[in-house]
Image (tube, rainbow, N blue to C red):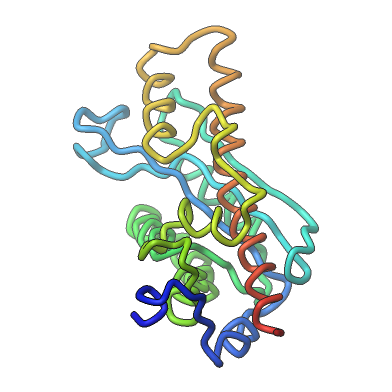
Length: 224
């Protein structure tokens, strides 16, 4: 609260130890979902969150990207089973931390367990590896550029000003939902489908790369 009043940065003395709890190699994960009043596919309830996409950056150390995996479902049917199996494959069986921003991914993973109980063991292991980067920032660091918010869309320009969503065709989660729904409902067709899919992949990719760069920045700050 004092940092907000004085407009000064605040760094907890425990920021370094909080970051040191992360196990390498680290996996930076972001999900995109759709939710509609009128279900797009059979056997889906109104307003049910349907996982359609993920991005995954793998780093050997802060800022050291080794691999990038991504998945974007086709818009013709519910592809959650295929997505879940590919996610398990991409995340591997190691002990490396899976870094997310807030609790959304944990909620969606829990939903996948209910949907596919035979995948429970693998998905439970993934959940146990989750580390919430937003929670670490919320507890241990504040920048006046946050203006009281810890949304990644606010935190990123304050800490990593060279990164921005402004140049993307899809700039936020709402636009991502609308784009996928428009493809599924046949409002986007032909060559525009490929362009829309590229835009969705670029948006989700930036979400995980943003976490990579935020973590790198925080690691540097923790050593000062």
